[in-house]
Each structure stands twice: as C-alpha cells, then as structure tokens.
Length: 417
Picture 1: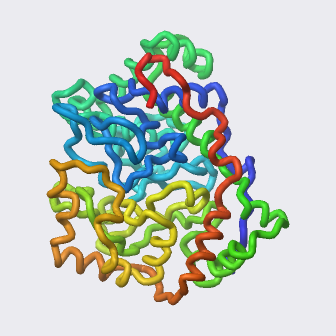
Picture 2 (picture 1 turned 45 degrees about the vertical axis):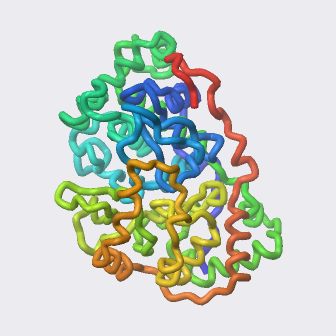
C-alpha cells in the first residue's frame, strides 16, 4: 500500500499577494485575447471549479460560460473546438509540480537556458518565476483558444510570424491601462514605471494568482490523515484504491505520478493534429517527444477535487467518475459501450462532420485500442460506488470558497464572464 502524504501550506511556492491580485484581474480580463472576447477565466471559471464543464472547450469566438457556452454567430463563430479538455488548476502551485499540459509539453528544464522546456523553446523570455508563469503565456497565443484567426487582429497575425512576437503587443495593451500600470509599479520592485512592464511580469502575476487561488488540502481525506475516520463507504473505497493498483499512477500528495500513460479513451473531436499528421487524432505525449513508445499517452491528472471537475479524461470522454472507473477496469468493454452522447459537446452544426470522424478510421481505432497501460481488473458495481465515495472524500471543504474569486470588473472595462 502506498504511503499517505500530508499537504500543508508550506508545500506551495511563495506568492506575493499584490502580484496575485493583479493576476486575478488579468485572469478574467479579455484584454489578453486577440479579439478582446475571451479570458483565462472563461474556460477556467470559479463557478465551474476552475474548469468549463465541457468535454472539449469552446474557445475564441464563443459566447457564454460553462456547459451553456455556445459556438458564436456570424463571422465570429468558432472554426474548431479546443482539442482537449480544460485541465484542472487545483494545486498547480504545489512545489512538487514539474510538468504541465496533458502532453507534458511544458516542464522545468535547463534545455533552452530560460528554465523551461516549452513550445517556445529559446524564444520563451527570461525571468518567469514559476512553471505556472510560463504556462500562462501559451493560451494567449493559441489561435483557437485566445489569439483568434490570422488577419483578425494584430496578436493573431504576430503569432503566425513567430510565437514570441505577439507577447510584447499583449504587454503594451496591459501596461497602457493606467490602473494596471500603477499596480505593476507597486507590486514589482524592479518596475519603476508602467513602460517597464513586459509579458514576464504579466505571466508572473497570473502564475501567482493561480498558485495561491487554487490550493486545496482540507478534504475529508486530509482529516483522515489527521486521525478522523472516513464514512464507511469512503473508507472501503480508500482501501480498494490503495490495494488494487489505482495508487501506482495516482500517487503522491496530489494523487498523480506526473507521468504519462495510455488508457485507450474513446476518441473524438478535431484531434491535436501535427504538421505531417493532419488526421483528427491525438497522439498525446508522442506529439511532444516524437517517440513511438509515447503514443497515446497522457499525463496522470491529480485527483484532489476531482469530483468537481467533470467530465473526465484528456478529451472529457466520460461524464461521471463511475464511468471513468469502469473504463479503467475494462477499457475494451468500455470503448465498445461508449456512445457520442456521453461527450459534453455544445451543438455546433458546421463542425458536426468532424466531431466523430476519427471513429470511422478503423486502423486508427485499432492502434489506439492496442496501446494501453492499464492492468486487468475485476471490480463490482459496489466496489465502483465505494471508489466514487473515496474520490468524493478528496474534495476540499472550502473548495468552492476561494481567497479572491471572480472580480466584478477589470481595469480594461471589458465585460467579465
């Protein structure tokens, strides 16, 4: 049985509260997006526990928040769904976190001399304090997430020249708003005037907010670690979890080994296509490493507050924890039983032909089904219910009461989702 690990406030990266306050405003400010129509908080909203409640998100051009978000209208309507499920933000500021994104394309590294191995390679700027600060820069320059389409705005156009060309444009947008300029001067010792603000300070402010806002370590399980018994069903689930192999991947204080595993989830959506691999599939970690042994592997998610962050899987294939557990117990049977109705996808008629096209590619479906790392497991429906009870016991008692929350307004004056 794996050893239980306590989480405490001392386990998180230190955060300057003034910088986190700037980050809170920026997180919900659409000024960071190319067309000024989407914020980080649109897809990682407080009302949805830091997610959006969708299998695959509706990015730039959409309207609304959460499961009610629509694909937009007229020339602003979306051209593609976001290829992967919006990842949870919980506990990403924990000092054990070394890799981010479903495919691990951002990690702590000295490879490029800037502290990180990232899609920006040597063009990622120096001075980003944390992995979270670096992560915050990439959605801004992702076409279908926040940047928009070429010829729509200067950020999207610059991004298509080179990934780092758009960041100075975004920084100028922010620092020339007087309220932001004054806040940066006050919060960052090396910033003497607003003109000194760069994308680095913006990233560091966003990183400070995410690191401090989404800490959670006050669940019934944490109380159990301190000596308070769990309810009977959750206790049975806990014993099962640590005895039947769940903890071999969902290990450590955050219930993740931060490694990559193939679990043969049902495929759908536009895929994360690559330059020489344009079919609508997602090869996972292999897209980052180009190693065949990494095909269809995805990062193990943390399970803290997992009951709040449905749907589940890198593409949100399963709407409930019970369905996800059934898949892990018997992937072959679960894939056969899966139906498109299980995917939480807002209706987008002009994308309907793409949504499930990959499922008609029999050779590709066979490849994905053949590569999976899960051991054979026989569990009953009672066992599944007990495991779900344990996973619910990983929900923090104050998870839905965050330190800063969603601001009512932002300095740009743009509407707050």
